[in-house]
Length: 590
Ligand SMILES: Nc1nc2c(ncn2[C@@H]2O[C@H](COP(=O)(O)OP(=O)(O)OP(=O)(O)O)[C@@H](O)[C@H]2O)c(=O)[nH]1
Image 1: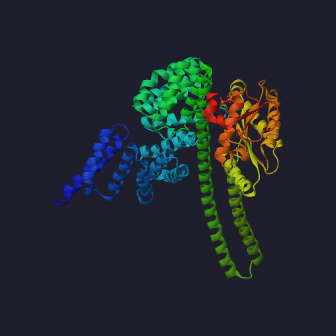
Image 2: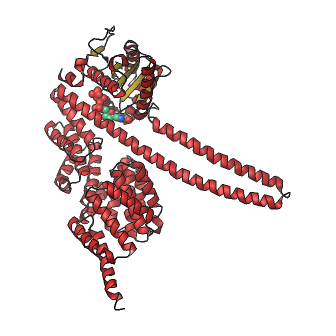
């Protein structure tokens, strides 16, 4: 007993220190680091579960320090090896969180869903609720707002602590806003904000404020939204949390521009672009770039406007790619879950089949007809599950390749198809062309006639464009209001004729059919392999430059990209050409 006592005292000190470190890990970094150093020194005295707990805390520390890869590796090993349910649950959620930061979306969802399977075994309500918060936040980030809402509501109905209630409110408001039905009353939202502030949860309080401000702005109360966001901006800046700072500044930039305060709008937008550690495809960056483009345009500085437009278009494309990647990861994870369930069904059927076979062997003659019928039913069910699996796979592949609004090839698939066609064209020495269409003043259509009308226009453009594609051509939607066509066996002259037909067909789309009086038109850029070679990137860059030329030249027209030495091609009405000397940079100077 006398020998055991010191180690028992140490063991309890160790476990007490572990709990103290856990409690301050997100609120007091210095105390957290200090506790971890002490725990490391005492590690020799800890038991296996305590050592695993320490390992988990060290992984949190790595995340705080930005060492994502190392934390990801050791947390995923821990998830596979540790048996204790709470530590397994927490390490799985940690992997899911880190993977969202490192953009390994499929990996993140796989760990999230595996960790959530353990939820019912977690008896500590706080830890169980921590998982609901992570799940809700991640599903919102993946654009799966219905799931985000489901997790927030599950948590709220499970008697959460005040702190977890604040987190759940934040997830819930963001999800409702994402689903487009934030119907909460103002006092209710303000109560949630106050509750988060009381808990010292500044990030969540301000995230909810942002949702409320966006709702006001959407209802025309732009000044009220600005005042609300500006009042909290210093507190948001003090958190050092790039994502929220970017969101506040980008909203302020957009709303200030709406009121015509270009200078203030520009100041906020520049601040967003200067934030460190921000993805170019993040929504705040796309919004900020758009504001900068509009400000330059408003100043009449065409050169700067073109440059800003290019940066905006790049950011917008990166964002669309990102959204698609998240959506694809989500579909893939659903497919994996469905496959897992199917495998279980298959195994069950196979077991049943085996049992029946044994019974058949025993009973031989008796009931043979009934057994054969049963075997037939089971064999068909095996066939059915196999067929369903294949069909689901086909559907998923199609989903990953198609733009869901227009049914055209999406950006990634368009590129893959075009690259294959370009390789063939090079091999066979055949010409090929590429057209790039960007709808004109499309934002006005959205703003004045509604997003649903904007969607209707995009579908109409796809419909009329398809009519002019020949068998073998590839037609894709490669950005929000940007379309592209790869024309096989087609040189610049023919490509321009097809482009002109498509432009005309787009220009006669009658928006009044969907209640919108605004005209629809597109600016087009044409390139051909005979001028720009067979590299996809180069062709798109040249088509882009020609398309910008059409924009600058007054829109609703087509422009070609060609070398100065190329044989002159008859120039139809509304066609402008971009010589090599007028490549993007030089062109912007013109
Ligand atoms: N309805 C709808 N709008 C979209 C979609 N994707 C992008 N947009 C919108 O397309 C608009 C593009 O606007 P801008 O880039 O300013 O371009 P624009 O108004 O066409 O102006 P110019 O290109 O300069 O002629 C933005 O308002 C986007 O929100 C979509 O899938 N549906």
